[in-house]
Length: 536
Image 1: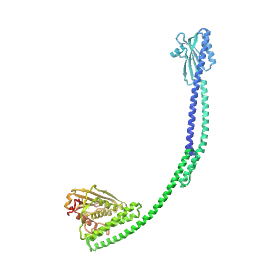
Image 2: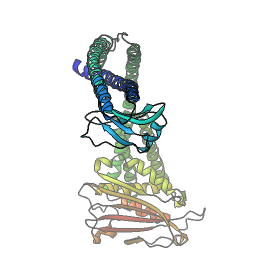
Image 3: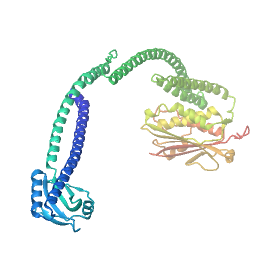
């Protein structure tokens, strides 16, 4: 962990320190080089001008500018006194040609004076040019030779900078040594300061974080070190305080939730017992009705009553079972509301059974989509467990149909229940509503319907992907007590009840089925146009 911290903080500090020292060394070398070269240029120029003055005096004493012996002696004296001068050349300007008179290095092919050099020297001014040779850098200086206050010639020399280059290299070596020492000392100081001022406070802060991560929220980080680290430690301590407060609040909420769960379970148990008693009563009623059907004591009408009471009872049982697994309060209220609704529906059915002995079914405006949604709410809870996919395609808007709402709801519930029970291995249940004019239904028409269908109708389709029904049995499935299920699997009254309701409403009924593909039931119901709609 120490090495990781060293690499993370000290490495950057060392990198910045080394970079700054290197930049400083480069800047010092650059400034030293510039200063030394400037001083060298000024010094060499002054020395060369003095050398040119010496040559002028010698020529003046000799009385002849072309005295070769005097010029050679003067050049030899100058080069002996000034070893930095590598080469001297004397040019004649009296005739205006600028020809070479004498050179200290006969082997070197002298370059004639340029026009600029002749012009400047003739005016009594010197010309300086730098020769940046890789081996030997030097200044090329051309100065006038005076005789009787007039320019008679030019002296050009090559002044080497080897002494100054040596000095520059020594300065660079010294700067490098000083820089390396400065880097080493700076790194040692940085390391010491970081370990004392940064590493130790951060280590303490990290130890506190690890203890907090392990669950010890009472630990507090020491607020020491630089101001930034103190700010981090203080903020971390405030964060721990908030976490402790949040943990205490969470414990309080958990306790309240547990108390609420206990109260809720008590209410659910009471509601379940109430529903169980109602279920027992309804089961007993259904048993008596089925016994009466089998004995033909009460006939087909009594069997219909028992069947009508059994379907909502199954829905109630399913919702009661789901209540024990429901944890959402809104979900519990919704299921209890559905159960109460179904109990009310059963009471209405019982009253309807008692009243229907003497009174016919009354026709009224019924919203078919609303009935579909209510039935889907009852059966949707059990479909996922049976691996059945529900697909509802409801037309919107859809006109009201003429019929009895309770009876139509029972018809749809019977059709959906039969479809679900037929798909033992799972499958797809499709429910569709649509407004039609004169489109014939698909499959075998069981009921042709009343003449009011010519004014428009609403079509209800219930389709499943079950095993299907053989063709020779399609017209018999609507007969009372006829069933295609195994023994004990049904009373054979559901579709008979549906048949009777559709007849009463003046609707059309058709069935399509293929063995191995599924079954589709189509019901066309007349549109409600007022009190005189039901003319069947």
